[in-house]
Length: 320
Image (tube, rainbow, N blue to C red; front, side, top):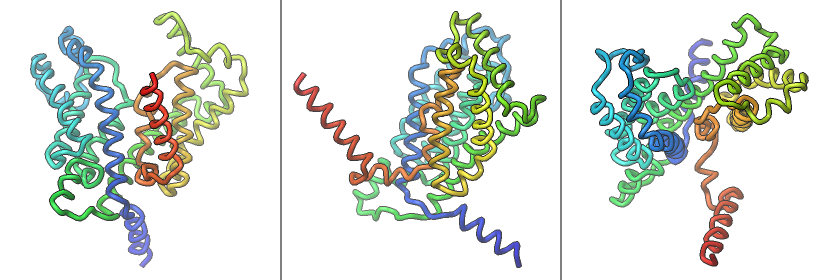
């Protein structure tokens, strides 16, 4: 009798009804970042698959290819990814554009990683896009939803159909951090990593590499290196955020707190080590932990502040 009850509670928690607009907001966040990453790097992608074919070492979807593809084909894949990414972000023709964008993004970034170092930071982006692409993430805050209402359709309410993709996107984010914590425990330093010395040594090695390759280390490295207590605090904090992360999925309030703290952690990594986790530093990777539909409500303090800021900016431009 216990198993069905436990299973029922897990299913009820996982299939918690959520608004279509919240899922739509997560879709917009994911698509916006993807486009902001892809478009400025058009020339980089164009040149990448025109380099020496001997440098090609397939990973991900690229393992299914017979070898290096003609550059013209990959140029087409790139622009199709951008086009479907625009449709995905706007929520237009989502039943076709959504799954196609997830597949094309997976293919494009797999091929991109096959020519250089593997950028693990974008694994979450690809999986998020694929989840959102196959779910009903365009039922709210989308062109499809606007056209549906214009034809007399009734806006959808909260449903488990919008809850499970949000939970799954959050779970993917959480698993990535939890595995990072497990990897630290599995390394030779183990729990000593939390004492700060291993972290301090890692940051020092990274700073030396930056000095040699780029001529300077991260801005805060020289300032904090002599303060060993700071590294002890950072080591403990990192373990807490990574190994304690499952709690963020069990409680939405804890999830919000965790998302804000880990967002700050990534900016701290950037200032201390100079390493850019772009998707994480944008904050958009944590969109599933927030009640986006409430944040966008005109009556909320955040929305009121943003509206006031926009109006002041408009007035200043007019005066200028």
